[in-house]
Length: 58
Image (cartoon, rainbow, N blue to C red):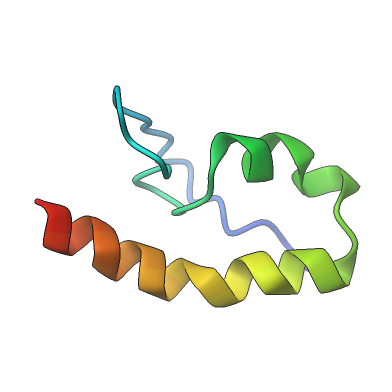
């Protein structure tokens, strides 16, 4: 089982698409325990690009 990328910094501002702490969407966060390892891996592969996207948007 692939562990959650949550780092206990849960911040979703108005109009933000991703959590500032883990870079997941609200749907990904709420469904994490139901996702297969394949689905979790797909989410994890997107996190670095999302972090960069958020950094550029600032």
